[in-house]
Image (cartoon, rainbow, N blue to C red):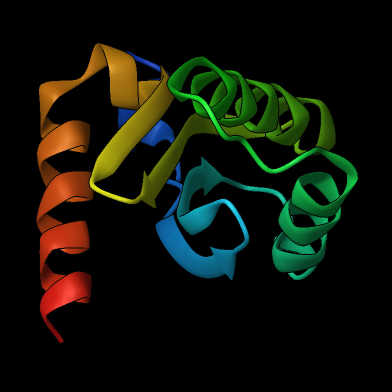
Length: 122
C-alpha cells in the first residue's frame, strides 16, 4: 500500500528547534530566544554587535526600544525564523519583545518561560 503525502504543510514539516542564549551586557542580562532553520553559529556576535552599537538604556522606554530593535535586527539577519523573543532583565525591570510563534502560540510561550525559569535556577 502506497503512503500518501501529508494533507497539511505543518504535518510534513521538520520542526525548527528553540534555542535560548544568555548574554551579559551593560544594559543588563539579555536572553535571546529564536526558533529558526538558519545557521545560528554567529548569533552571539550579531547580538553583541547590535548591543555595542546602541547606547546603554537609562530609561524604561529606551530599554523597550532596544529590545524591539534587536528583535527586528534578528528578523533581518535570519530569514528562516518562526519566532523571536528578546528578554532584557536589568535592575528589577524585565522587558520581553516577542514575535511570531512566541506571540501566536501559547505553548511556545509556556516552553520559553519554563526554560527561562529553569535556566535562571541552575
